[in-house]
Length: 178
Image (cartoon, rainbow, N blue to C red; front, side):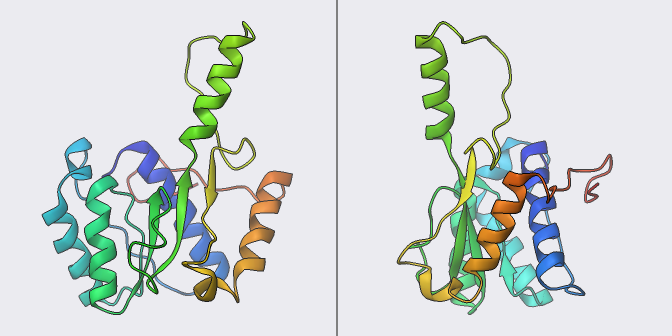
């Protein structure tokens, strides 16, 4: 789904792959250009299968409920995946490396606290790692899978919070990052 938030996820994923494994090729596929892709489980499954047959080792489906089928394909074809939005580490045990968490609870808590303190105002907020709006899931379901990379992930997370590592943003054309 090529909406801006998904393109942001893609840029972060691409940057992470390139930082961790220079020279690894990253292929990006979008299910649609609108919100219908988040529900198109058949298209997600077909796209994941195409990517696996194309040689993908890790699938990162920022595709809402349709992403569950991508995680299933990863497990069926002995590939890894990264869950998106909520903790999906236990959905396909042994195949979900981690989950990119969208911390809606943090956003709601902040909004309620602002409202109770008469500090709330309308508008769009962007909550990243620094604000606690996104994170990665590390628990018993993926501990063995990420044991050798957890320290590097935490170091990157700390660097982002400190402002010494900047995450690329989507460029003007689909598939580009700045």
